[in-house]
Image (cartoon, rainbow, N blue to C red; front, side, top):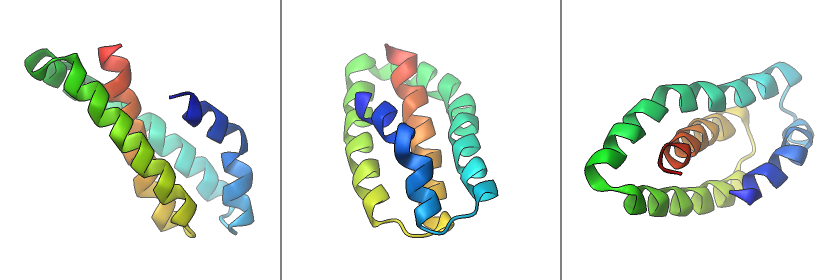
Length: 97
């Protein structure tokens, strides 16, 4: 999860170089927080049923795929769903750690 912190320090510059307007970059960052807010209770309940280990493995695999897909993203509509998914995975990881 350290990789996400490193990416966020330069992520907005990357998005700006792709030609994404500043307002849409703000929406992308906000989407992650809103997604985390929505999914945190759901993953908390799920982890009570299935345990912590499957959720942690899911988040690790998801982060790997998300960061790979970031490198292939070129538009706002490519990045936004990835950011929503990343926010949900952060919520899942936070719920079990």
